[in-house]
Length: 143
Image (tube, rainbow, N blue to C red):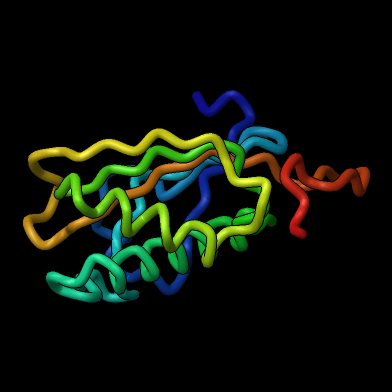
């Protein structure tokens, strides 16, 4: 039973065809994403050992997923950021001001001992509110 939810799939993400989870789900104007990592379209990690590159790839992947859902990064209202090393928190914070627009989403950022793949340094899941069919702007309009 999907209760009126629409499951979101990015067509060019070939690796996701094997996944046993949804990339995202849209319920009305609300979108929930899976934990997005720095994968390319074929499932290879981008930026091995390079947190800056991995963060940029994660944000590009989030933007692609939200675009397929009918939104953009500006629609994100909450994000959960998981980092492999505590020192990466400063890197993510620095890049957030470059890759996102103010006002920034509510954020939880934690350092964890492991992620799903040993080469992953960052994973981000988010909730977004999309522009409605009535033309009302998203909760977080782009500056």
